[in-house]
Length: 441
Ligand SMILES: NC(=O)c1ccc[n+]([C@@H]2O[C@H](COP(=O)([O-])OP(=O)(O)OC[C@H]3O[C@@H](n4cnc5c(N)ncnc54)[C@H](O)[C@@H]3O)[C@@H](O)[C@H]2O)c1
Ligand SMILES: O=C(CO)[C@@H](O)[C@H](O)[C@H](O)[C@H](O)COP(=O)(O)O
Ligand SMILES: [Zn+2]
Image (cartoon, rainbow, N blue to C red):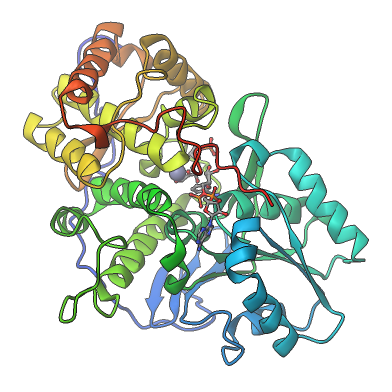
């Protein structure tokens, strides 16, 4: 569409005021009101279609004194899955917890190699094969204790096994706690396409224990911060400012007297991010509306991940996508250049990449636009910021002529070429620490 670009005529006003951090509203264990309601124990969501679930925030989820996880198992047979890393770090505690709280012989724990290269149908079949070998019936429960890859695989398996059984997520990464754990999506990569196969399958329970993040490598923490920046840019300028003021949140030393000392800052960031994401997902849980603000950072990123053979992790690709989308907004006159720079500056401040030379090419990025256009009903619905805290949609491919895309890529390439901007780069191919997401025994 020539001429007027960006905000559609009659586009519903999607800008929202920033919301105070840490707002707590009264809630009940079985929330009956539609919407998202926060309470001291976590969040309850009830969607317009009647789908309802809780996401709990607890301390010591694997402490045998904590009844929460056992209560959610409801005396049913349980097959639990952990990645090798999580097994090494928490496997003994998990087995001790299940021994203490569940009937002998009613549970088992399986170690499932993960990583993006194993986020496949074969892994889903392996989960189902283990459930079958354990004699799990349709009233059984799959328990995923891990990050987003493990939860996506186990959740997809649960959506199919015996035509659909319960699963529980204990989210052990920051991406898991603020994103995977609060939604209903499950799925795997297939046919060289990120998340091509999957299901909307709400978990019976989803549990966040922020203490589990203490062992998360910095790179994985940064991936989670990428998803948090996503929510801050589209919804919450105050959360954005908090990250600007405390870029080492989750990573920095905790000094006495520091609000982080008791983990208050981390808890506030997690809860705010959870609430924002659940509020965005709730009215459109199964994506009948394909224009979604939470797809900010998720148009170019699937191609960056796949084309890099997962050298670039999900959260890193989302960061690069957000930087590129911000520059596109600037070039289309939809955001003030200074606000565009604020977004990109924060991503770099957090140690996230904002460019990847091998994948941020005009051809691959144009491919990503076309793939998203196909995936979103022949409309682009590219999310771009209009200021920190608000965003809109660039709806069609014609709104993004090749010279604009090229200029945005050139701006990021020039920025990445500046001396001392290592943070702006995606990991080198040689960086194998978690680079491929290989997590095998
Ligand atoms: N379903 C959804 O709505 C949704 C939302 C966002 C992302 N995702 C998907 O999630 C995936 C990314 O998830 P992720 O960022 O959690 O990565 P991940 O699942 O690959 O986990 C990263 C690494 O950290 C390890 N790990 C997990 N918990 C740990 C802990 N507490 N301490 C130390 N190491 C730990 C894992 O074993 C793994 O090696 C992507 O595939 C993405 O597509 C899905
Ligand atoms: O990565 C996240 C959210 O951070 C996913 O839940 C997210 O919804 C999707 O990957 C993107 O929105 C793209 O949607 P989809 O086509 O992969 O379902
Ligand atoms: Zn994501």
